[in-house]
Length: 620
Image 1 (tube, rainbow, N blue to C red):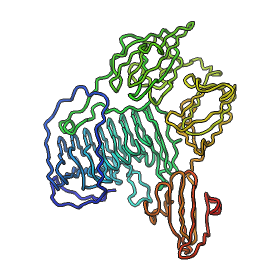
Image 2: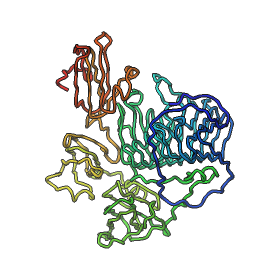
Image 3: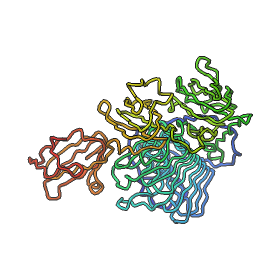
Image 4: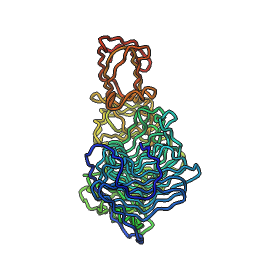
């Protein structure tokens, strides 16, 4: 976290403080899908070449606009510092090229100091190779109090966060309490940034039409409070969505509202819960650079950005329905039913990976058939290709066998299965839904049994794997999921769920998805999600290992150093035997090991409780 608040003029300095970090270089590459179309008109720009061992420094103040600069840090030890301070400032058309090492951990910093003020950062490319161990692409100060609008920002390869903007949400007990300022990030691309690609932490902040593509940890990290994510793709991370933190109690309430967005994985830290994610994925995420976002430093500096032509509309009044796949998809099956004629067609555009979208090309699997007054169609595709149909009437049902590898498009726009039915007019408008089938979706690793008041059956795409009488009956279903990326089952049922029991599978329980009619249920009602509190007092040395994460409780955190006293899933400490010798730990999962030994020749455990209940060390 930066503590540098000095005001400096634009300059290049040959003497600077040395920041010592690991030297492992994160040599990222541009992985851009989709071809750029026409370019906006170019403007003149200034190239600032930073010499070896020098630092270019620029402070942008209230009412100032700083624009059209290409900063070249290719020379050995060349770095930069950009800081925006005050109110109503603008930074635009800035590109960074070269290698960043031995500089400030947050070389690009911003805040608005007037609660009614704004700051604008737009058309920026910050994707050098990075050699420092904890460096952030763009940092928003904790004492930011107004609003910052970030538009068309391309940030890659940073060894900490891509855009780190959660500090304004810091709790009052934090050493640097947050001021509550908001941040909106639009049309931006963040890739291969280690801690997270995007990070927000205040009510009213938003992520709109952005893409987070890969990195060692998180796509979007909602550290505190709530944010909206609209029209975004987040994929290729351990956690495409992450909520909360194990140290700060305020993080337990982190939440997200998702709208027309695509992601695959979601995890919560500490006491946060993925049940606080409102919305479901609308297909699979795609690695894409949003329209207008620059794809090079030069493109940013001269004021241009990539602009993609919109997909042409189909040439008739019929609906163009397409099933499109990722490049690594293999034999992805789908089918749908419609109350109107269906025919194969070719879409007038390509898939995001440049593949052909045409129905009927796989003659062994693709089909269209009329059954009395209804139509039934389906097929198999993959490899970044797709199948397309013209549908003259409402689609009444649709299923996709590999939703992680295939998505649905209606007239060139990505939609969910429910949206396809609703928007083509295939939903039941009578209000009589007594016998209407609902859906239960389960994904992850577990064994489960569900009972309903009506009937239950596997969805069409899953029926071939499930045997009636063994996996399900009239009003029950009982099955298991292995935990693989494709471990998922969808059931169709009528009435209500009267019982749902979830147990471990091969010793582990993980619920990635538990949703009824597309709405995620509270996982904590069915599995133990924690967090738990372990309190230990007396005189001893001890080591704890857990199956989830562990952190000191907030009141104890200031005495305990991460990496020395604890890590992700372990804690190791000592107690002196004084009246105040006590530590409280917060953890998720289960305690897998607890070792207690003497301290200074004495072992005296006065208190050992889990969630307030006394336990013996041997029980753990």
